[in-house]
Amino acid sequence: MPDETASTNVPDRDVALSKMSNSGQSSPSEPTLQASEGSHAIQILMRATEPVSTGQLANRLVALECKVCPGVGRPPHLHREEDEMFYVLEGQLTYLLNDQIGIANPGASFYVPPRTIHAWRNDGSSDARVLVITRNEKIERFFESWSIDLSRGVSDTASIQRLCQEHDTELFAETSEFAKPAKKLGTQDETVPTPAAAFLRPVSKQKSPPLQVFGIQIEILLSGDETSDTHCVYQLEIPPQAGLPLYLNKRALESLYITSGQFELMIHGRKHRLQAGDFVSIPPGVEHGLRNIGETTGYVFGQSVPAGNEKFFQLIDRLSREGQLSQSALAKAFRDHGIEPA
Image (tube, rainbow, N blue to C red; front, side, top):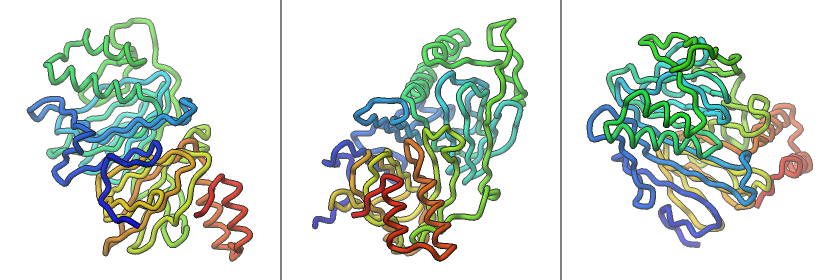
């Protein structure tokens, strides 16, 4: 069995694997998009849009790793159809979620449903890195187009409004304190839509104790109950030599983003080394496994589209705690959740 370092030229069907070097530059086939040469930039360091064969919205995935320079952010706005999940990797962000204002530190995440007014800005003195997850490539094009306009020195209100209109986004007036906006930018009679169920999940305030599954700890950051089962997001805490055994998911597209540590990814018998900043998107029906090959505990940010993985994790945790995780119970859990062990 060959042992090779991961590259973006993965021969397996529809698997997207993006590698980031320690300098923050992407591989040649995933070029870095830099908004400007100066410090007033949002840099899209990695992106992946992976539609599966159905081409349906529920089966699409966009992941953006953004470097946000001090003083840079996005003014209050909403997306009419797209939701977003933000996960702070480094630094901190000041955020607005409807009428809630606060600080998101490393490890914190916040979820923004469609038609939710939100804003974010780096008020710190150093760069921030943020992982943005959504299910529609409109968000990717929105980030890209706004960054290109900034690099060209285009920042006037009319240009920003045009850009927002092209990407089904509504822009609101900004204040220095991110106060809740009352009217859309450039309008006099339209009011703010009904607030949606946006929320911040600080790293120190988990909803419940971590799940114990196959020797790893799992924190559910976003469940299918909160997204109408369109997708779920979770964090894996994996000790050395532990990980996810070989399996395939018949129903869901899965993504894995390495937050920290050294890992070995197995896809159809091929080994790929992963480290912090690497990202892989795996369509349904592709056999894969993940193992921590480092000497310290590693962390992985995972997602399934549609949701379902979190319910499998919760079931295995419960059966384990109750002493009922027999071979027959485990086999039934796999079948009921569309998972096939290798």
